[in-house]
Length: 261
Image 1: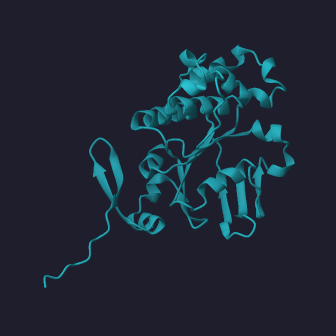
Image 2 (image 1 turned 90 degrees about the horizontal axis):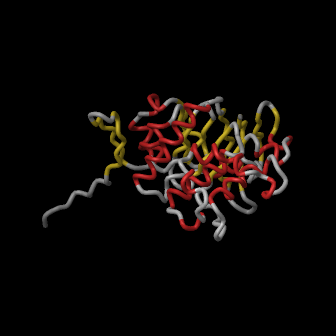
């Protein structure tokens, strides 16, 4: 997938994305990082055709996204959003089946066995018959991940998937994504709020500020204290932690000097 000079603005609003160009290399994990309001989630919505570029073009396999029907695109690109609808009393297995609708016409025609492997991939087999509303936030996030995987996409997009999860479920989700990538070579594009998570899980980083691509490259090439300080407009320090490696720390602002009168 490739974005070529893509810009976006809502009617009567300022431009959110400015002439953005980047390429998603097949089989890579890419994290999009930047301050709030930088345009990160907008990029994912454009890549899934939830939004349409104001200018520029997004291509998939050399074809513009507009050349694909909705079902065709859903068979290639899936997204897990920050917030998803909760279907009262709908069982986990049936929620996961919704991901198979891109290959079927009606939910009733999808046999249970067709989604068993997606439940297993996301450690949900034992919860298959539970109502989704009875699950914790971390478990629900895994259900939506399973539904996205059931689309069998080439590209899996996740919009801040760890935002509402505690540390345990954050680590659990990151492990699942690493395993999926290792076993299936799926291209994964994440918007992450946690900079250190992004640096640890990714093959490549896109650093965004004010709707523009400021820098992109391997995490090793982006461990730049001044670059990170400029992007996030805060004091940054990169430290080394034994057994962990480099860790990015946001420092509190310096207090003004006080005079003793």
